Image (cartoon, rainbow, N blue to C red; front, top):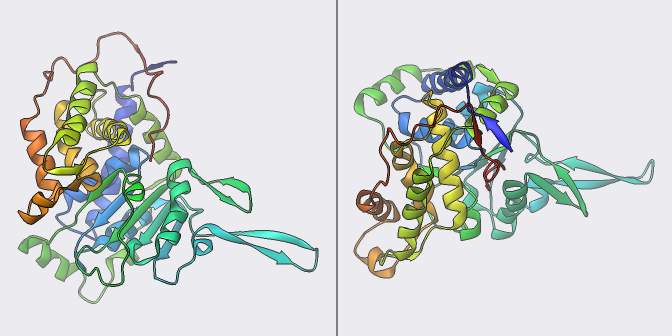
Length: 345
């Protein structure tokens, strides 16, 4: 299948949509450009996002601010140890008056699903999200139901307070396209937060700045971004290096390569470019790869994290292409037939 590259007007529309969402989120949380960029890149790449950080830094607020900035359906699930899979996916209720079962959809049937403190639920309940994140569908009582489009899971978890929690299985972590951390604010941003939150809730004033149709159009544009063969080779080299890294017990999966490619295309589209640069891959490599990796015992004992190991791999992996070589040829159409399917999430 041959598709044309995005036009300047299409790229301008993507930049406009994402900049409006960014500005809307920034009215609630200041100084989080890195986290907001990771969020928007994941959204345009049709992935799912894991926000992991200490309590009180705005993980849930970031998720809610994004959801309120888009005129779409939102489902929020507060994960607790007693949460059941049916509380996530929905349940069939027997109606005695007409002797039939009626399906009541769960909160997962929404465009944006906020999974708050996802690691507090049991693995059985966590697994209720696996099919929806992978297939964008839910099977209940033998019947498969499609989820809305676009569909995004934004999950939060606290890495510090681990008592009474269940670590996410590797299969679950691998389905999240990216993991971002909010981090502590800079003093000036914390001062701005004190002013904006003094006696009011800024979230209450957030209004939608775009809708699902515009978001779906931006996603379609991001899919058509050109990726030079050497850029793809660079992604393969990065992912392969994680599998050969002595400091890692588990490297990145092929799904990670697909998702790094998709996220890089989304970042390029946000920047108004019709092609991916090596800098796009570098900027997203830690967010997309690190949460899938398992450091070796020696690395853990020495205090080396998966993020640090990923940065080391990026630093020493050669970029086999110049910025000029990444630009597509002047032909109007590019063959994307081998990678136009929605990225595995």
